[in-house]
Image (cartoon, rainbow, N blue to C red; front, side, top):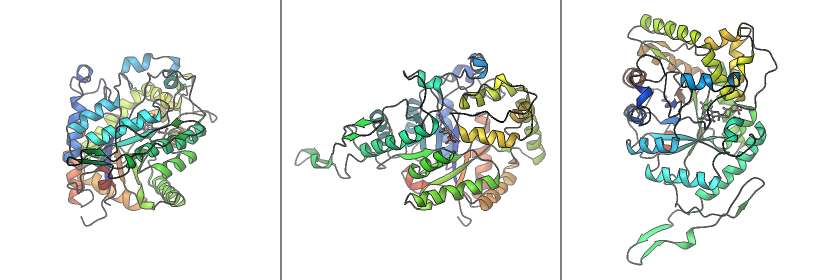
Length: 434
Ligand SMILES: Cc1cc2nc3c(=O)[nH]c(=O)nc-3n(C[C@H](O)[C@H](O)[C@H](O)COP(=O)(O)O)c2cc1C
């Protein structure tokens, strides 16, 4: 590859019915339970050389919008939603190189359970598992687990620091070479290389060692998305890859420079963590066709303003249904949920009404033929610096996947911008290759 290549990943909105009611979704409303579409998607992305597929998750049904579950249930907004560990297992069984990154929230999994689950996934995938490490953002979810609510935003990250100490300790509780498997001596495991961790912190305790044995990668790849100042500190300390929702090139540049500086402050190399920016290109056979499709998508989004706001309500716990749609968002809304997403929504909204802001949320300037979009992506990476993109299409269908894997990717490959094949068997090795 001649130009500096970048990495690609895909953000799949949970193992859920995607794009309910849209064209090109086949019979997803009935077929979602046996997730062949997602398994086929993982295979397609692997064929196209993606670094990873990130499987988003939340473990509750939304009800922040108008204090009701109706809009979420009627329209299939992040519901029904399956447990990501099961779907991740099916995905790794059907692939051999791509990284699979299920999401598990720290409030929902005791650290030992998480360390064991993820180590097992890393083993059965021969070193291709990542963990989207989230602290959770909703009191509704917390109540499903016997809690009254989630701890306050920054405290969640303090707890998460400790959580990472426990799971890292557990993953390290098997020294390299602990599994001897020597038929002659009859020894399977060298007992001197397996250690208890006896961790007793302020929030968590665990004795160890991990009974599942070690991760082939040593530790799984850690993906993180904290965007607030406290979130960035956490992500740059622990993450192997950071996914960011900032959209403008200037904001991308600032974000990456900040993360790289923070990595160095933590004593890491600035290249140890790959920052991927969300992108949702609209492709077409010609530029005019792509523009027309953008107009159709914008019109569709305008019709679905309430659903868009319900989505924002779910991740911020703010009832956007209580505000006047035809007035700008009042200045003093605060969230104990996704702060960076709310900030980005407000930054983009400016003085627009809530209706206009919601309708315009998915505007993208990556519109055109595969070749045009590939060129623009190259320019963006050149200007922002950066390690790559995280595709985050609002509506995922087999058609959308094929447009990327069989249209856009070959155009990027022709320019030497993305890999044509995997160099290594394990996920982290490929992620750190360039
Ligand atoms: C691309 C992306 C993917 C995310 N995926 C999830 C997810 O699957 N589950 C979840 O609870 N939070 C998810 N989040 C939210 C983050 O984990 C984090 O809570 C959010 O970015 C807010 O962090 P901040 O308050 O530090 O800005 C995601 C965020 C981004 C930008």
